[in-house]
Length: 176
Image (tube, rainbow, N blue to C red; front, side, top):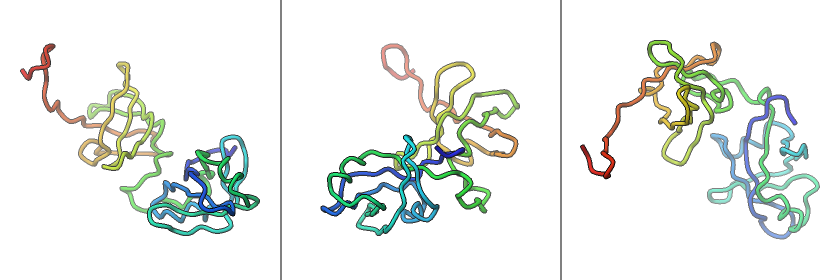
């Protein structure tokens, strides 16, 4: 496995009978995952992209040595990784690779430890940061400039200004 693996795509169902597969890309440009050199699965299997094209909302991919529908079916659900060093540097200060955020220390605005970034999720309505709280448990926060006014990957931390509670409910489920 790569030294710093970054998840770029997940193989889905076969497309046709000649070994092509549908691929869900996690890159900004759906076709760009194929330009970072050979990709690797968690088990160490290496995949070389021979051809990739858009078809509606998915990428149709032909991998080297995958030539039958049966071989393509066996790949369904396989996650594809590239080494972090093969990805381009981020030039915009407001853009980050989720890989670079995972594991950062989260500080409150007073500089006290709030928690650690567990993961970054995108459920379709914007990025969500999952934090392992220092006080125990996990909590989800929208990854916005208002909630996270400072991100310093070099220093290994980000600052949180958690939003207030929207509404509180008593034990009976009624608003206070």
